[in-house]
Picture 1 (cartoon, rainbow, N blue to C red):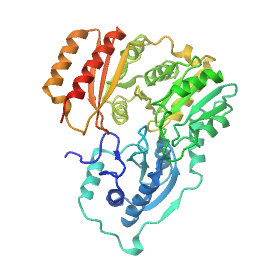
Picture 2 (tube, one colour):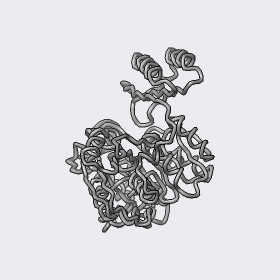
Picture 3 (spheres, rainbow, N blue to C red):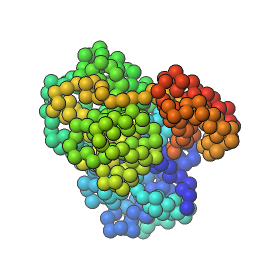
Picture 4 (tube, helix red, strand yellow):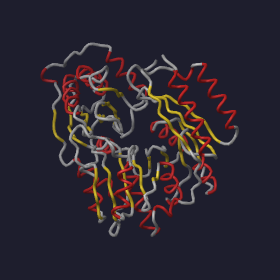
Length: 440
């Protein structure tokens, strides 16, 4: 069956428009609670990022879950991977994340984790959608779920993160942290300071409206400038919910997910292979070949990276955008844990991040996001297919072209990669213009 609501990363959209409305969230809470309550454990955790609508949706989900007879543990503001960890650590049957990740505050969404800290299967998502088509039937009053605050949730997650790097002493490192005015604003600065680093935090004063605004992993210019101004050793930028990370080296250079993967693969022990995505730079693949490390590409989306890691029994994967999955440490993408692994390597190798990654090959790449009026299968349009064929003929065998629709937004991502930066940019702009011209 085709899913109506769930995309590649949960359910997401503009607040106040279907399905991101309070009444839908009430029904979603009931539907999910009914599916989850088929197990013996009747407790679900809810966490959120800092956007203002999170409070409204938290209350609606809590009411729906209670109506289904499910207890609700409230985590408050918590990074997405922290919710995954606490779901796994406790006896909760599932965890719910209220977040739209790197998107602006006008958007919001819902992600689920099952009891083992991993994303829901397609079967469970379809079961929830089936229940959404049924009316809410509240359980008897004596069977209603209860709500409670989870004590010391932040401290538990912080300790887990520190254990992931064996409490590596970071004394002597000067770090600029960009918390995107999001879910890491209170967790990350305290954690890195506890490990001994000198921490300069920016974008760490959320007001419900400034999440991801000119800050975080999708807008790192302020971080780059601050690293240079402070003469810091490294800059670390998270996205709004903390499952992505982008780094800045001591020279102010941006270190994306591909370069982070390269450093992790090169210096971590027991790496048998690395999973990237269709968007991963060809230079990463070639560089890993030079290290005799197998590389495989998954579809874009951390859930697909995770699926391929499991199939190959590998432990390291990620995306150019900064989703890093280190299965030796955790079950899902975690920006803080990935950053800690890089810092640990820097301390062990007694080397700067610039030096650790400077030998990785990198092909010029242009990525353009083309906004559509609505989500639809625009890529099947004959004019776009013809434009792709012509572009591939121009590029010949000197690079790659990839067009893909976002799984969560009405956006087409146009990616062109090759040996010549000017040619790559020109081809990408031409393809983006064709996509933008087509109307639904």
